[in-house]
Amino acid sequence: MKPALLTAALIGLLLMLAPFVLEWSAPSPPPGNRVLPVEQAFVISHRRDGNAVRVDITIAPDAYLYRHTLSADGQGVELGHWQPPAGEPHEDEYFGKSEIYRRQLTLSLPVASATSGGHIMLHYQGCTTGLCYPPQQRVLALN
Image (tube, rainbow, N blue to C red; front, side, top):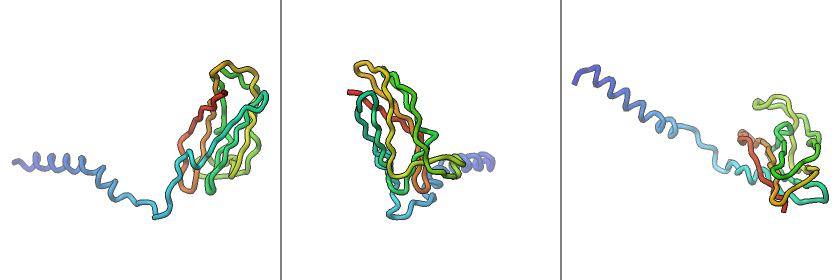
């Protein structure tokens, strides 16, 4: 076999194996440092409260929710004007200076009108120690 062909075959083999080698060599999280699934980091419940929907978000210890990522839009629901409450000042490498919530957050989303089967889409994003979750959305059904 010619040296150039042998070299090309060897390089090709190394390139195919590189992702597996890199994955095996990546550091594992220390035992006991299990990252919570996003559904456990931010437990969301809601209920209709007259002309509003009350949304309660329980935030796990070591987790926080960004104020500027909170938004809601209605599908078959016309929402009135609302604004999230002020949060605590925070600065991190992900979003710089921002406001966050810890432990518990309650939102009141005013409902101007709703059709049968309408729902609200809640958008949010948060982090826990060493990890930021991707942006999330949650359907809040109005039964």
